[in-house]
Amino acid sequence: MAVLTVPHRPIVNGLSVDVEDWFQVGAFENTIARDTWDRLPLRVSDNVLRILDLFAEADAKATFFTLGWVAQRNPLLMRRIADAGHEIASHGWDHARVHTLDRASFAADIAKAREVLQDVSGAAVTGYRAPSFSIDQRTPWAYLELAEQGYAYSSSVAPVAHDHYGWREAPRFAFHPLPHSPLVEIPVTTAMLGGRRVAAGGGGFFRVLPYAFSRWAIRQVNRVEQRPAVFYFHPWEIDPQQPRVAGAPMRSRLRHYTGLDQMADKLRALVGEFAWGRMDVIAHREAARASSLAA
Image 1: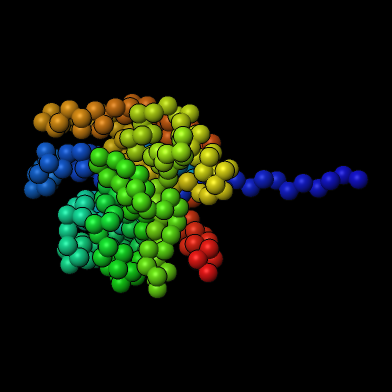
Image 2: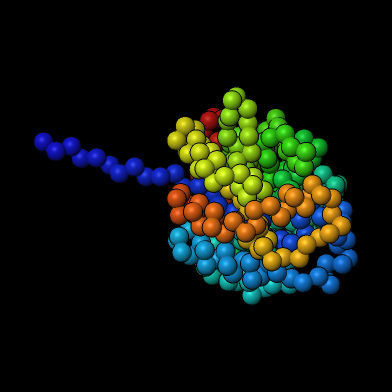
């Protein structure tokens, strides 16, 4: 008698884009003043359109964590993202790190960004990602404010030690940061190498390291941990022709510009090799799992 086998269904991973322009990144925050932004060439729209085409080729859906500042100046782009079936979520107003704000300033920042994002996209905003993954042990009030404003999830933690960001003691996978709230935190992906956590969720690590490293890390999370990976990148990372910031520290310039010319091809390979979905869908599933484990 023939044995009926059920095809293996791949785990759907969280695909995300942190929508900010080339001059708004953490690497240049002490070099390019915010009051000069409106005098600089905007490149984010063209780069996002290229990303939308790349995702359409692979039939991949994603979440676009977008600065309110960018959305206000690119309303048609926000509509284009939403109309393509992707999620619009908040990246705050102007890329101020959470730990540089107090609770009142943070509350105003995320409320202002959300209002603009919803107005221009026509879609509800339920997700948030802190600039530079800047929710950590210094900001215990951030989750209280997100919950109070009705956010369903955050993806604002990098559970590693890093000179630029990181909350090493945070869980690697989804958790409820507040005991009496459904708000769920979905940390960016890490892998285990030699008993140590290593950053493996995208950004500069994806550009600088061989593609094989990211393949290995995502397979480890999917096959060994049986969990979805969370991957992120920025529109400026597929833009080798962007202006160069000569006044920035050498270390910042190396981090920002290395691998830009290879990024689009690596992304195309990544979205073609694994299954990807929106972060709100991942958050819903991971929230249910976190709740069942805590019960």
